Each structure stands twice: as structure tokens, then as C-alpha cells.
Amino acid sequence: MVCLMKRLAFIFLTVSICAAALLCGCGESASTKTNTPSYTPSEADIAFDKGADQPPSLKTLYTMADILVSQGRDAQAEMVLTRIINEHPDFSPAYNSLAELKMRQRRIDEAIKILSSGLEVAPSDAVLLNNLGMCWMIKRRYEKALNYFTQAAGVIPQNTRYRANMAVALGFLGRDDEALALYRQILPEYQAVRNLEIIRAARNSRPGNAASKADSALP
Image (cartoon, rainbow, N blue to C red; front, side, top):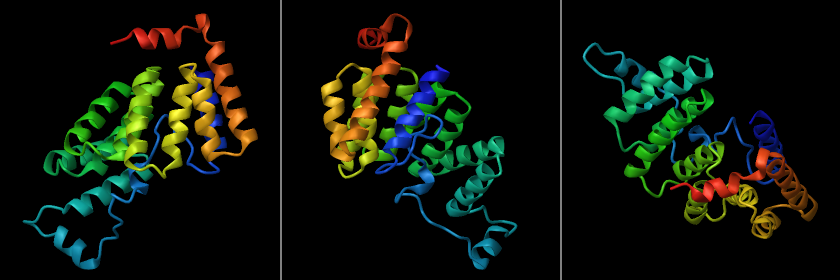
């Protein structure tokens, strides 16, 4: 599994010419998306939030969570993000940020539940869809991963990251021609061919080379 993840990381580093790299199994950071508010608290906001009888605003809570994550204080960040989701269930960036924490801790099933809850609120959120696909990639459920990557690409067709993720899933399913065709849309020919070679080698190196068959047999 470690070898597989290293190869995946290499693949996406190559793809980074036109799309960002995989980050520890997480396809896309909520903090970089356009649906995440860019916010620096003003003195007035800070003063307001410090009021004895006033709860912190959504923007302040989300900024606090981001700071805690940057400081490596994951437990505190998780508490703040959970509070945001409970108090503001329609704020989709919080679902992504919380799922990222879980994925870094290799708590993939919990991340899947969080992202799925977010999609109940925002079913067309491309970041949620893509990151849920990444969760299924880590679990080697490539058909499921492909389904979510495809949905994400349908929402934002110009996003090359989503098509690159589709190509990886197709490659691990043994659908090499389709994977190569997608890579050729976003990469120079030699890089498209090289990426597919790396995926094929990773796929063929697994004991029994039965991941695709097992995946297709799962409900």
C-alpha cells in the first residue's frame, strides 16, 4: 500500500503541470476553492466576536479552524469544524476541511461519511465530489472513485485535476485506452504515456493482480 501511494503521488506530481498534486490522499483543499470565503477579520469583527454575549461569527470560526490546522492542532480544529457543521450545515467548505483532517489521520471511512453528508446539502459541489472520489481511490474502489471524479468533471469541465483523477481511476480499472485519451487532453504526449506506464506497473505489481475484479464484484 505504501508503494502504491508513492506511485500515485508521483503520477500526480507529473500531472501538476496542469493540475495540483495529490495531498496525502486528499484531492483538493477546501481552503483554495472559490466557494470558500477569503477572509481576514477586521478590528471591528474581532471586537464584536469578543463581546461577552456574542457568539463568534461563521467567518471567524472558519478562520480559527484554518489557523489551528496550520499549527498542527488537529483536535482543536476538528472541534471547531464540527461546531461549524452543526451550526451552519449548509457551509460546504467545513465538510471538506474536516474530511481532510480525517484523511490525514487515515480515518477514511469517517471522511467518506463527512463528505457524503456535505453532498446531501450541496449535491453539485465539485470539491466534495472529487474528494469523495479520492477516498474511494485510497480504498481501491476504483469504479466508485471514477463515478465521483466524473461527476466533479461534469460540474467544472475545465478543471484538469478532475480529468486527471478520472484517468488514474480508469488506469487502475485496466481501461488503458480511455485513461490515455484523457491524459492526452491535459498533458504532452510523453507525459501522458509515462503516467499510464506508472499506473500499469502499480496495477500489475499487486499480488494476484485482482483489484479490478474485486472492485467490480463489490456492491
